[in-house]
Length: 307
Ligand code: UT7
Image (cartoon, rainbow, N blue to C red; front, side, top):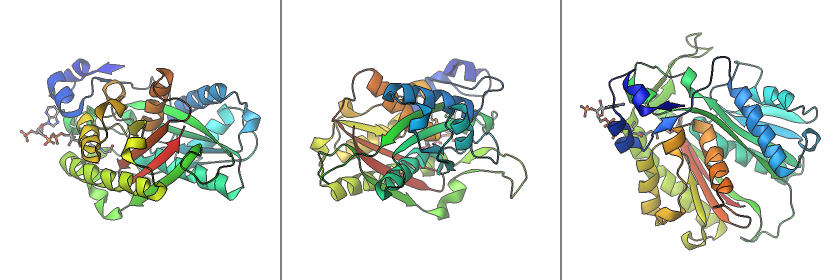
């Protein structure tokens, strides 16, 4: 765990600035030798145990990550192997901070097609490896982590009372590449590169687009703000989260915030927040939960879920 105070020793920043501008107090950084798949395996194992399932019960593993262990094979195949899953398929999804929403949407569509019955969806990241630790504008914002959920086929009636993923809304606009990107890669520099961000631009874009895509999820399902039990947004910045919730008219007490403890963990932030809210008893079976995220690309999206 790395506190804001510890970062004060690395770059010209302060605990006060970080807390005021972002709400972040601490973040977790992997130990030497730990990788995205190591955390993904731990999260996957915990999710399987929680669901009372074993490795043979899973026929698809999807891992959302922008920080894979290797260029290839996919991190999902490493997680599949680490969990002893020998059947089915595994692949990665790359949509940066929106990765978990994209992965959840993919799992939902595989299940609805009838081709797969139980999907392990993992969000896992080691952004500490792509940060420029001399850039105070980015290095204080991110952290490492992983979370996972199991998505299972179940008959529904098409009503809002159905359990599971009720709708997913995915968007992207590649014109914004230079606002949030990594300045390297196998096809360009041949190096891993470092994260670069125009924070102010991302902030403005985030609030507007997140609101649109949440409203579209409500419109598609016929649900209303008042039906919502929990709002679980991507955890990048407390101010973005609160501004979005306020504009949507979602009361602050229904908003799950974990950015203070984890920083921005990209594709891992939503499953980490779900885990926290479930373990402390906030999210219960039958609750209606809105997830949303925005990330590099830009990509953005939402998912309305009946727990
Ligand atoms: O995960 C999805 C994508 N990411 C996001 O959603 C992040 C979106 N952006 C943000 O969260 C915010 O824009 C930041 C937290 C990155 C920055 O907050 P801001 O209120 O937009 O600050 P700013 O960039 O306008 O910078 C204000 C000042 C600047 O100084 P001057 O030019 O006013 O003198 C910066 O140089 O704060 C300075 N600054 C810092 N000071 C202390 C920037 N970083 C730091 C720092 N410590 N770490």
